[in-house]
Image 1: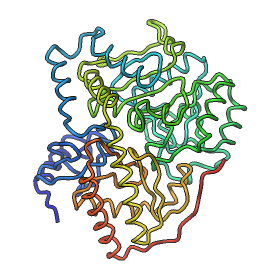
Image 2 (image 1 turned 135 degrees about the horizontal axis):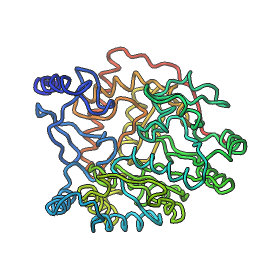
Image 3 (image 1 turned 30 degrees about the horizontal axis):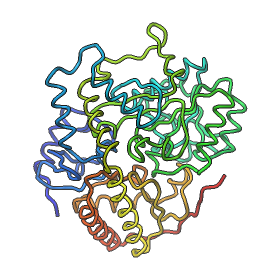
Image 4 (image 1 turned 180 degrees about the horizontal axis):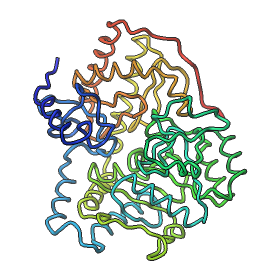
Length: 450
C-alpha cells in the first residue's frame, strides 16, 4: 500500500491558501486522495513522496508527446530568453499560425490562452457575423467555464434535463445570470430529429451550433457517421455558423483534428490542449470571411497574453513533431492495446461494458451494453464501480480520472511496456474490487440510431 505523508501534509497547506486546496475544482478528489505532484517525465508523474504513476489524465489531454518533452522545452527556453510579451506580433506567432493552417486547412488563426477563451471568442465572432444571438449546444458537452455555454454539461443530473423532445438547459454553476439561459438551446447529441426541428423553428435567432465532434467530457462518445455532415448541411441551408470545439480532439485524433478524421469542415474551430504539449495556448481558426469579422474598433478580440512567446514557441515545436513524426500513431498504438486489453479484462471478470472513443482519447462504461449515443446514456452506467476500480488503480500506480465521463488520454511516450504495466495493474485492481463483493447489476442496452 502506498504512503503519502509528505503529499498529505503539503495538501493541508494548500487548503489554507486555496479553496479546497486546488486551482481547478476537477483536481479535488477528497482530502485523502487529492495528489500533489512534484514532477512529470514521459508517461509518468511523481508525487511528493516519490510514488510513480502511469498518467492517463495528461493534464486532461494536453500532453500528447509526454511530460517534459525535451524538444518542446528547449524551444520554449530559446524563445523566452529574448522576452515573453511585447504588445506586438512576433515571429513565433507567425510560425505557429502557419503550422496550424497547413495541418488543419483553416484560412486564418487568432491566438488566446485557454480553451475557455477560444470558445468564448468564437461565439462572439459567430454572433457578430450573423447578427443573431442564440446558440445550440449538446448535452454532456463542455465548452469552457464562461457563462454563455456552461449549461447541461457532463456533470448535469439526468432528471433536470427534461424530456428528450423538449430539453431544459441546466445551469452548471451558481453565479450565472438566469437571463443567459434564454440564449442557450440544449439538445441531445446524435439526435437528428431534435436538431432539425429546432433549427427549422428558430433559425432566425440562431447564430451558431457549437459541437465537440466527439464528446470530450462524456465517455468519448462518437458521432453517428451521418451526424456531423447533417449539421454541416443544416448550417449551410440556414446560414448558421458551425463551430467545432476541438480543444480536446485538435491535433490529437488526427494531425488535422476532427475535421480531418470525420471529413467535415466547420466554419470556426477552437484549439488548445495538445497544440502546446501542456504549455498554455489556444487558438481560433476558420474561414477567412468569418474570421475577418474581427475588426479593430468593431468586434473585440484581445488579451494581454495572447500569442506569448511561451505558448507560441511550444505550439511551434509540438506541431512540428506531430506533423513530421509518427507521434500520433504511437499514441494510437498505445490506445488500441489499452482498449483491447481493458475489454478483455472486464469480460473475464464478467462485467458488461462498452468501450467508446478514439484510441488517443477513449473511455468505457461499466454494467452497460450496446453503444452509447449521448450523455443521457452514460448516466445508465455504473459510475460507482468505475470510481472504485479507478481508486484501486490509483493505489497501484495507474492514474486516470475516476469518472467514466472523462476520457483516458494516451501520448507518444506510452510505450508497449508501459501499456502492459498498466493492464497488469488494472487487472489486479478489478480483482481486488470484486473480492470486496461489488455486485454486477443488470444492464440497460442502448445503441446509436438515426
